[in-house]
Length: 107
Image (cartoon, rainbow, N blue to C red; front, side):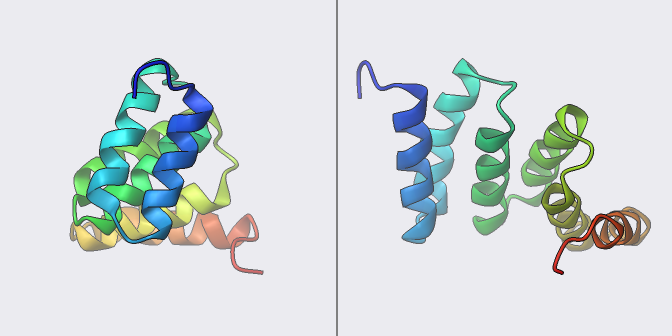
């Protein structure tokens, strides 16, 4: 929609994710990312949308971007580990599962 704020785009993307529409969520969240590429919440949600639609390489790229901006994000480490696992990269997967656990993810 014309004139949608970044917040509106983000909220609509999350709503689409929550109603199991990851492809549509990705479209909306890509628009938000173009406007605010440094916003980790948008990039994390976009990574989830990509992951849930089977686009694991794109999802991994988003989680890597989140970690570049916020290296202590335990959830992003966990999500990157899951992406790496789907992509067959056991070394990267183990590394990020360990980091997520060490940072307290899942406790």
